[in-house]
Amino acid sequence: MNILLIGSGGREHALAWSLADSPLTTRLVIAPGNPGMAPHGELRPIAADDLDGLCSLASEIAADLVVIGPEVPLVEGLADRLAELDIAAFGPSAAAAQLEGSKEFARAFCARHNVPQPAYYPVSDYAAACQHIDQLGGICVIKADGLAAGKGVVVADDAETAKVAAKSMLDGQFGDSGKRIVIEQRISGPEASLFALLDGDTAILMATAQDHKRAYDNDIGPNTGGMGAISPSPRLDKVLEDQVMQQIVHPVVRGMAAEGTPYRGVLYVGLMLTDDGPQVIEFNCRFGDPEAQVILPRLKTDIVSAMLATTTASLHHFDMRWDARAAVTVVMANKGYPGSYEKGSVIMDVDAAETVADCHVFHAGTALADNGDLIAVGGRVLAVTALGDDAASARRHAYEAVAKIDWQNGFYRNDIAKI
Ligand code: GLY
Image 1: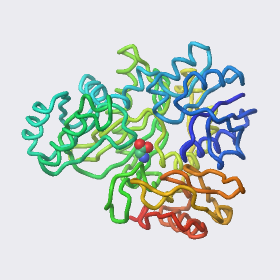
Image 2: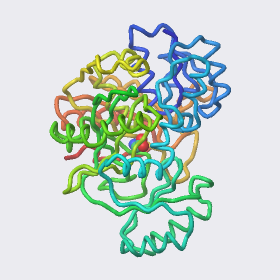
Image 3: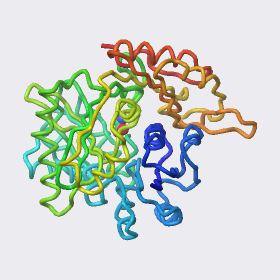
Image 4: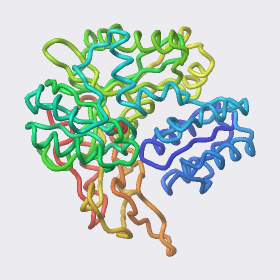
């Protein structure tokens, strides 16, 4: 099969590595990709939000399947554009991707289908925002309705912080994405993520994971896209997994079908495990980053078969097999991330890290300099993943591999997957 993969981050490197390993893949083209993905397929310099360019490329290579990694092209309707060309896409339609693309849509959908979640109040003016913030005693979460590259959420402990965040979003901090905001009751408990495949009619569990969002050790510092992850999640046992499937994932697949917007693709369910049971913090319409970097190395089933079962509505016949071992990934980021950072520092000895058993180094913000050096050009730059018989050994192997990488301008957390 000719497969086109869209995206350029660590998540897409993990996808490229898995797709290239499938016996069903005859040709893998990646747009735009990064240097770490070059051994797995042909890189084409077309941006992940250039829908016209991506559709032309899919036609040019006679793609049998297009795998859409990031949320922006999904929310903007790439899967729909490809469907018009009769090209199968792994990833939901724009209507279904609203579960991530509009926080208000997701909350209202959960309310219509009795999916457990915190109380929420969508607003578009500051006076109404203040009223709800005061009603919640200032202990609340403020979310921009639309996509904001992972930056559109503020968790507030007091009314002043909440009101400043609400005002700044409504005043255009995130452009149109913050024209409406959602004010949510703040719930508490450990966080975990569950990933499921949905084919429009049927949902099956994939795997669970837990990421670490704060920049520095001991969960301090600014929020990031994720500084590391572990799979399976130490917080989700079989009983909780079943509960999440019954109370959240199955109602989502049934509800989306009933509303005429069937969901096909991977559903990422961000959860808080409260005293009253699991509640939805957020949905994402794609794999997580860096969760994909710990989930995909544990996948034993052929990934292309799983994606085809999803696009052809045959998941009811499908079973996924997983490595029982744990996987841990440690993200190496550019000093300054998630704020501003320098570009162009040289990274050495990535090959040495991959000599550690069952270790994979997934690239994100890397590029090749004119002289062939590997250089850092993004915020999150590498995700160093290792497997182990349990979380502690996976963690040990991951840090052993990280220690072999020579990158003066990089930093990482030392407490990923520390139980
Ligand atoms: N790691 C969080 C995300 O992918 O949204």
